Length: 157
Image 1 (cartoon, one colour):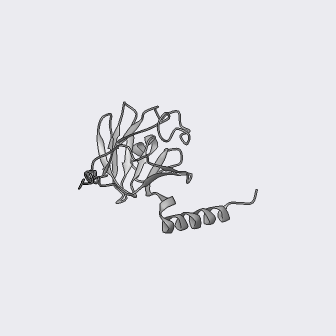
Image 2 (cartoon, one colour):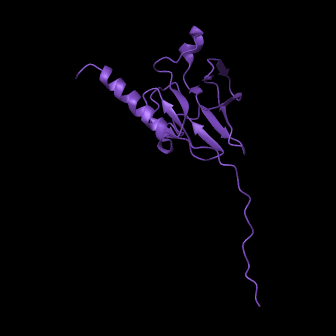
Image 3 (spheres, rainbow, N blue to C red):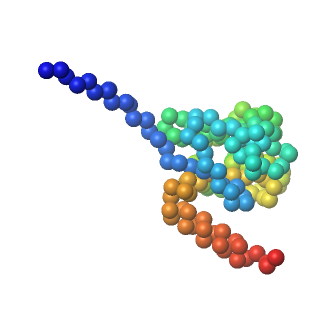
């Protein structure tokens, strides 16, 4: 009797939960499931970046085999990370910092670094790492509530 060949089971890779970057304006950009993602005027966030002070390849977002993220500054323009614990980490060209959900990557932190503050200012080109809201109903509902509150607070046009 002939035996039936079965394909060898593939080693299962640990897949990290889907994540996104949320801009100060509320635009949510999914982070691709890649090992290296460029951030800058020519990278993942290109459609959302308005400041000419952000370089084409300002920083790189790296993902290791375990799904952990690290942001690495590229070039001479300053980059910073504001952790969810309120710590401000300044990154010079080539240096990096581990990041997680709730941390904010600031691609144009000039005023923030000059003032020594630990809060994001308008025009800083800041992006917070969030859980992918399309796959997370509670997070999506929180975002809808936040946007409704924001719209209700605006003066009529």
